[in-house]
Image (cartoon, rainbow, N blue to C red):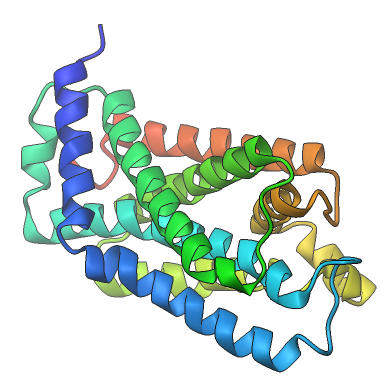
Length: 254
């Protein structure tokens, strides 16, 4: 039987943890995305057309929103776990009778909520640059939620693995940042040379952004079904790894 009270309590604790500092965890990434939008759309609007009939300013918005969602979903679980481990209060989270599934689901769902909240904020403040009403809103929501789930699961894994803040920072700087910035946020991969286009095709974050864009414009660099399959499999694999680590108590109970 699922411990719904324990799950809800841990989920609520994770929600309140980032909401109490919303200026840092929600408003700051929204402002950063707005600055990217202002600068890149001003500099490149007259030089780049990614999709026929779609301005560069409008093309940029879903990419920035998805990038912000992914980075903040990752930050939520990873920062919470590393802080609990460093300060020693992880014991108060491990003591209650929660299964690994309930533990993982609470952290994962909170990460998805933070990612979606940040993404909604980015879409609202940048909508004036020409963002159209989504051509396929269900696709947009599915890729937004699944993308946050993938990076949320990766954040849990990083938070469990890291023993110091600098290890977590290395994870963010050398894995998360390259994956997100080299995923087609600022350009269409059809404009890349064949070598870099091939490299982009092995980056799962590219499929999140491409699928999310398809939800708004009905156009994409690859089939949305292929993107959905890659993102869905990535979510299942990373969630399974996170669940396995928590079940074993890897670097949590020892």
